[in-house]
Amino acid sequence: MAKIIVIANGKGGTGKSTITVQFANYLTSIGKAVAVLDADEGQTVMDMRAIELKNNPGTEAPWPVWKATQNAQAFMDRAKDMGDCYVLVDCPGTLNENLLPYFKSANAIVVPFRYDDVVIMRTMDFMKILELANIEGKRLFLPNLINVRVKNPNEEVIKDMFRKRGGAVLPQINDLVAVQRISTIRPIEKAQKKAVGLSVDGILNVVG
Image (cartoon, rainbow, N blue to C red; front, side, top):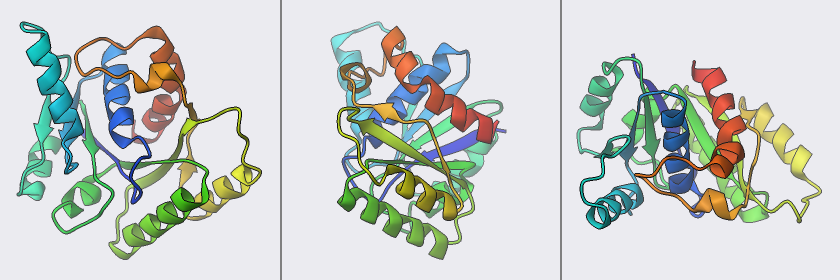
């Protein structure tokens, strides 16, 4: 049965699409079957794939990208029957009725965040929405695109706050040029694999 991993937060600009692509490339590099579902209104991953294939005709894509469908529940039912693979769902910063089946089907919900006050506040609001919707998938909080030169004195307090909401905190991903230089057709670079590897391994430890 496929493992469903949803990447979501109620705050935009936390790097959801970038993380989705990097995770897909990492999983492919270690021999895992993976597919990406683009459920974001901006269709970032879909558009990037289309542009890259247009500019590189004849290139074989390393993993498929699907556009979110109106019948999300039927799609999730089919996805679960795909066998031993990982389906990464790139979600927008909202949780509406159409998206609910993705969250309810998730084995894990990866929540990228930064340590600034507005992002933390929106992230906590998003957690409340998940709780009200009775979403059961494991919450995995991911400090993402972190500037290592700027230390937030409340980092440990924030991590403890997330843990008390029933989640786990993944190893952080630093704000590196290599991390943001993403491609949906090229193999993951050595620097990228090093940057995201611990985080992806943490997810795999949870979902299997």
